[in-house]
Length: 256
Length: 361
Image (cartoon, rainbow over all chains, first blue to last red; front, side, top):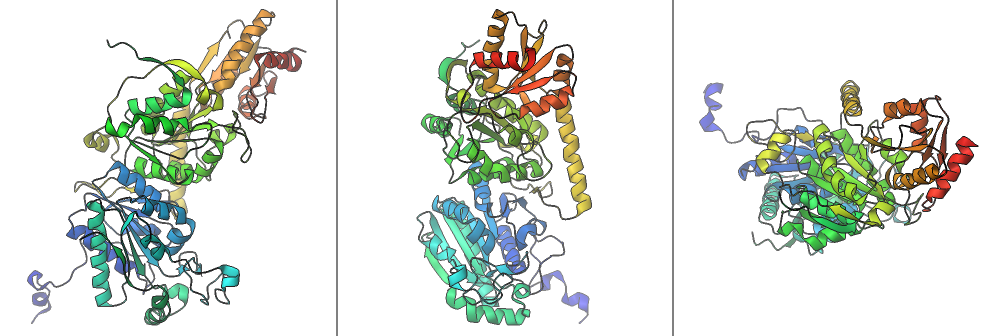
């Protein structure tokens, strides 16, 4: 069979999501961001919401998320994405509004904005990429860095006597009355990617149905920051991150 | 024609009424003395039941300015207010709005500083307001009301200017104007814009991409220095246009005057009385009141000062606007400063005494 016969449209089983731009990504090979971007793009297209979506990107590795998805975006100051999203959603209640934030942005400098937006029950979704490190600035300690984990600013390992403890924002979010869906997922296997996509879909549906705030944490790899190969990073995540950041739905009152 | 609605109210309350009446889509704010009546009045008037305007108490000034960023970035008329320490906290967001060219409006009902300072009135945030205030080379349009009427009228004006130039605009008031009660005529009711009108007026807004256009991106970020320099040059050209077209000021008794008092906001109200008192004593004094503090009426002040014997800049701070007046006058005539600090509001008599002591001798 000739190649052109094989790649005929009727044989299509997989394609680049139509809302992904043809832009070279700046993410490192092995990083989880690309996969999560793809899932967000697919869900928006599946829901036919591309003309009614506003994304809010953070400061951190995902600062350029607006280059990659073919939707309207607002780039927020560090940690302020939930406040920016609140402004957009309150002004345009029929829009799909989500933030896309890393652990430093969401769980450190933007803790107040995150907790209060969630607790007000803003009808937004927060996609939370937790890789336990500051990726963009070169691998410094994050609020979610594990005890003993080495980073550029705790080169001998995170020591709670000096640095305090990892902050579990998703557990915290599940206790807030304003949240309707709080879940923790990963994108390291095909099965986990499928589950993560379903979680994002549920969160976006809940936002549009006015059920309250949703938080979708993705436990993610930063192989460059962790100084591991992509394959080793996945292993390290499974061995060290998953026991501390346990996957699964922490809260679901959506009825979806 | 419908009868004019005359009411007696505080400056802060006037802001709230005017916001609802001029088609504001949303107010986001955090309580702080001496301006809390703005959000309290809005909460009492419940505009979400009438015009559909949203009123939301944020968790901090940092959050409220970023809610303004989001709302303005989505093309809406959004407003916040605070007093000096809260405005200091907002500077990050204001800089981002200037960088992203967003047309939000914010109100500073100033109190004395530095730090937690006092809850009494002051004009000591002049530098912060007129020099940008946050990081980077930028300016915000600054309007200084001197009456409860202007508190009301400047809300719509600030929005008009903000949207005309895609630039943040500030109303720089103080605890005197915010708290004093005066008779005012409420501005006429103006409907909120429809989605169609917003899409037309704000083709840049990130509010959902229709199939007929590329995505709109609201951002102040650009890593390529060459592109960032061009963006800065664009901003500076815009500021030049604003300086050329939007200077506003008022003069009183200046024609035959030997001396000029330059004052803004509440200090200008006290200055009016000082002019009266001085003239009773046979000293011919006039008042020049900048209404826009940025852009500053430099040319107009120079033109006026040239033929006079001297200028007294009277402001409720340690000497801030006096620097702009000195730059404008450029040594043509003596320019002196008088101010009270820490929340003390000067008497007109003190201003006349200062004029005599510093300029007439």
